[in-house]
Image 1 (tube, rainbow, N blue to C red):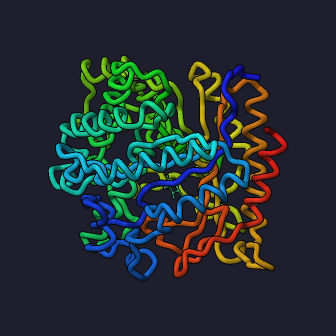
Image 2: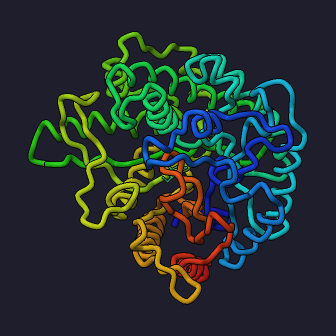
Length: 460
Ligand code: BGC
């Protein structure tokens, strides 16, 4: 078993925009999600009605979050991963600090520690400051400096009590999915149809985000902090839809370079593999990576990898998709929201990181599922969710198996403790271990919470 002096983290994870609400309280600035939801009615194109994170699950209220922390504590969790809202701390993205925003997170950090729950802080989980978005957002290389400035404020304020930071959550999904859906909605096009041209435009943006993350990593160390800093990336190992069809096999390989390998290599090896560069320049012939950029990436490699795993990706060849690859096929009869249920793919992935990435320390920073109403049945004050319960148990088994085989996994965070605002899918798509009645804010435990509690107790 991989040696780790620290206790294994058993936690759950959330993101500011999905839980906090209080979108305009106490001097907070606007994030792009405030605008996507309120001005562009982003969820309407996807679920047929307008929903926003304006209230969400009210986690900005201390009364509320103290009760929520108590529920997590009762379930035996020893860690909570949450994100900070950048525009709550810096309303204009840079410059003026909003003290009430910092105060909120300061209290939250203290309250978690007082409950023996380790705070694991994500600096950025998609709620980018709107003012900076209007200045070109990630397309503007100034994002490197903007993010450094914000990260410096965060490290200065919380670095004394928080020793695990995650610079960014799933930059790939932010850039190649969420922003493109938003772009389509604003342009009144079908939300989920992306063109090669759109993809091409986004390529330098994701590169800029990796540079911004790397710059923050090196600033963290230069400031003398001794905790660990990493990044959370979405990993969906590819499987050819038809393994006997060479076109599907090739499409799966290309998709792997684009979706997984790029996000794995840039922050951990500080490199761009030939097949990654070949894929990216197919999308954007002008894209290149300078020696200076590579030097920055290499000098600022992460201490750990946050693995967000939901499902592998079945890929088939499709001539009218960018890169000729169509991901997102789900052969399961009983479909989970985020793809086919294959815990063995998580096990394989962890061994791959063990073998190909120098056995880098790993935290499973997200893993979870939802299956819709059929798996959310209220019986005697508990929500029965046998499918989610089974999903969580089997994925934890896969993680512990990989750990027993030497993968340096140091923690597992279920996504998510409470049902919350599921981005363009609004409130209908539930992933929580604890049910939330969004009209009353009433919390009701689910069967999966009790099952997770028992697993944690058995492995403590
Ligand atoms: C994101 C979460 C999201 C979850 C479930 C992840 O990709 O990081 O914010 O709620 O998936 O869809």
